[in-house]
Length: 178
Image 1 (spheres, rainbow, N blue to C red):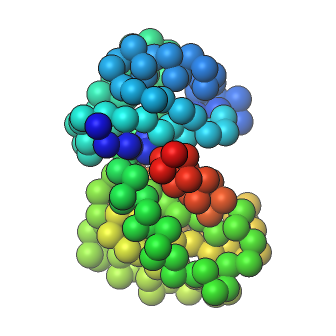
Image 2: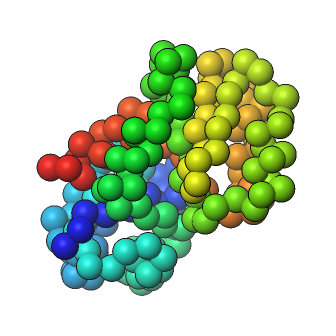
């Protein structure tokens, strides 16, 4: 069975949508997924499953809602897709602080007009690049007051998005390859 990386959006943030990682692993194992592992407390899951893509996203969302009482959006990538995200790394030469380098994982590709508008935004010294269903964002001044971060919301993008910093992205890939 292929390794999958499931990214839960909006859990354990600011005291909202509290989900323990041990109960989450148990729920997903009971749902038939193998070798379920989590990274950090922010909804990063690696598992094996015959189901992939949107089907896996919907089944994970349903199991979590039914058993844990929260309804996070889930975005899934295969281990190979995550490896391609890391290999692309458009800001590796400038992003010297991995916690300020983020990848937003999208539920689907952006509409062309939205992508053009995002890429044309005047956000210097921040940088952004869209590659398929990922948006790479370099926030050298931090994420808190970032003009770019304000453009990376679901409402602005028109699709569901969940961001992870570069440290988390690379650790998830390591975990998926184990």
